[in-house]
Image (cartoon, rainbow, N blue to C red; front, side, top):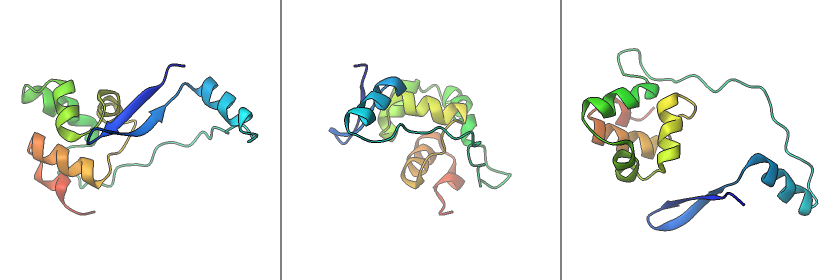
Length: 112
């Protein structure tokens, strides 16, 4: 299996498996196959004067930080950071605070 393990504080937290293997695991467990909905991701609730999280890549590059280094500093996998940078995922409050600290965007650390 092509499993990716995502750790936090040195402890495994998530396991990411390819879709086909996930479906096979569900079937082996006697559960119905997962259904995919065609919903667009939620829109960011960031104020207009703050950069969007999809601008993380530009901010990171402007500071000369490698993606692997920022991911390690923030406590996420490089793959998850790439999803944030592409706009595919919205970071939770803890990740927003870490990104704000490392990229110098104070408004991201404010409570929503």
